[in-house]
Image 1 (tube, one colour):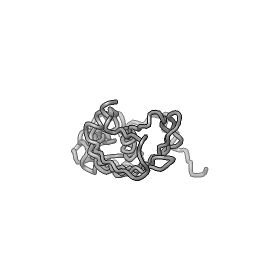
Image 2 (image 1 turned 135 degrees about the vertical axis):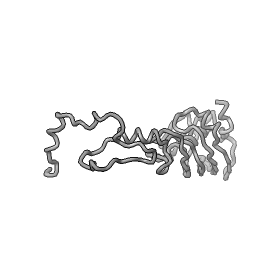
Image 3 (image 1 turned 120 degrees about the vertical axis):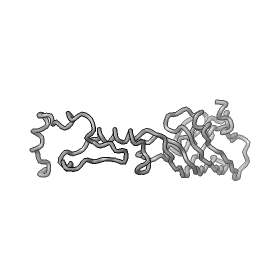
Image 4 (image 1 turned 30 degrees about the vertical axis):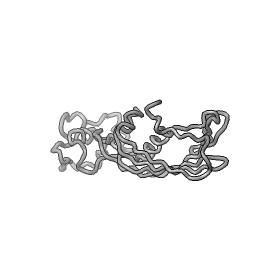
Length: 195
């Protein structure tokens, strides 16, 4: 992984003390990672490394903006990233992960590449649901979303047509969606409130 060689940190030979590193995760970084979650970005990374006799304590501070697909319209949207993370590295006989924050790397390698850790810190900071601000979604896709969105028929007022800013309405298109399957009709009388 020569393209990530600048994220290699040689641990063997470091004297006890504190070290600082700075990185910029740009579009090329995210393209080189080649994962679908994040395509572009500009994230500043400040890394503080504290070397002790028994471990290497990494403290990461990430701040910036990434471009990810909107969950609703699938167009690209900006997402603010701001996170602090910690990683403790120890030297041992073979690679292993003791926990989410503690890993062991082989003593004979004595080096760690932090590129994938940085990417994971970014991705774990993305909210589960991420949408454009109201009115900013792709209007055509938003209309399609609203048309196929599951709604409770009891909550719909027949005199109102719900339109979004695109001029499309939920009722545009085929009216066969309004017919209720008779097999489901009998379930309307069930009451779950007594349970």
